[in-house]
View (cartoon, rainbow over the protein chains, first blue to last red):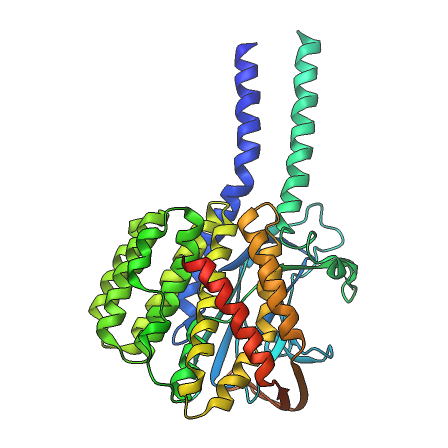
Length: 149
Length: 302
C-alpha cells in the first residue's frame, strides 16, 4: 500500500515537472542545433521556441529596418516534417513562402523602408489515418547585419 | 484493497488529463490572455482547421538603433548612459534584470561609438549583474573573456553582447521565468530609446533619427503585448501601464507605407522588399515621447 502511494506521488511529481523539462530540452535543442547556423548575422538575443504539434500555426511580428539585412531561421524537430513559413505584409499579402523554395529553413530579407511583417509558421498536419499527433520543438531565430557587409 | 487501488487508478487518470490540459495551455501561453482577437482567426488551408496561436514576440535589438545613431553622425555623450555606480542599488532580481538590459544597451552604444575603455568598464558591470542574476557561469564565463579579448573588434563585441543577452533570455525561459527575460528586453529597449532621444540633437542627420524613433511605433505594440503576457508579475503590470501610455503617444504618429516591388533572388536566398513610406512626427509629439521615456527609464535605473 505504501509502495503504491509512493509510486502515485512520484507520478504526480513527474507530471508537474514534465512540461518544464520538455521546454528546457527545446531550448537546449535550439542552442545546440540552430544558433550556429545564424552567423554571419548577429543573433537578436531573443529565443522564440516552443513545443508545437502537427497542424499548429504560430505567428511572430517582425520589424525590419532599412539599414540592416535580416535572416529568419525556423529550426524545427525533423519529426514534424517540412515546416512552412511565410512572411505576410499588413495587407495580408504573402511576400515570401518557403513552400516555393523547397521548404528551406532560412531566408534573408532586405527592405528600403522600415516595415512590420508577420511571420507565420505552419506545421504540417498529421495524416488523416494517424492515431497520434506528433509534437516537437520549433524555434524561430532572427539575425541582422549591416546591409553594406 | 481492490477498491482502494481502483480509486488510485482513477486519480492517476484524472492527473494525466489535468496534465494534458496544462501542457496544451503551456503551448499556447502568452496568447489567450492578451490577444483575444487572434483566437478568432482560423487557418483553413490544410485539412485540419487550427487557430492561429500568436505565441512569439520579438523586439528589435537595441544594437540596431545604436548602429543607426552612428550612421546618423551623432556625437558620443557618456552622460546619457546609466551610471556605473548605480549597479550597487540593484538588489532585487527584477531590478537586476531591467538593468542587465540597460547596461547591455550601454555597452553596445559605447562600443559602436568606438569608446573602448568605457565599453570595457560597462562589460565588467554587466558580468557582475549577470552573476547576481544567477545566470550559470559556464554559460557566461567564456563569453565575457572573449568580450574582453576581442574588444577591438566591433563586430565580435556586438555578436558576443547579443549572445550574452541570448544566454540570459534562454536561462530564464528554461527556468519558467519568462517574466524576468521580458524585463531584460524592456530595460534594453527603454535605454535604447532614451539614448536616441537625448543625442538626436547632436546628429548630422537629425531627420533620420527622428524618423527611426517614430518607427518604434511598430515595436512598442509588440513590447506591450510581451509584457501583458505575464499578468501575474506586478512589476511588469506596472510597466505595462507606463508603456501603454507611451504607446498612446506613438499611436498619434502617422506612418503610411506603400509597397512597390518584391524581388526574390533564389540563388542568394534573398528577398528584397521595396516600398515608399511617409512618417509624420512633430516636435510636440517627440517632446511627449521623450518625457515619458525619461520617466520610465528613471524608474528602471534608480
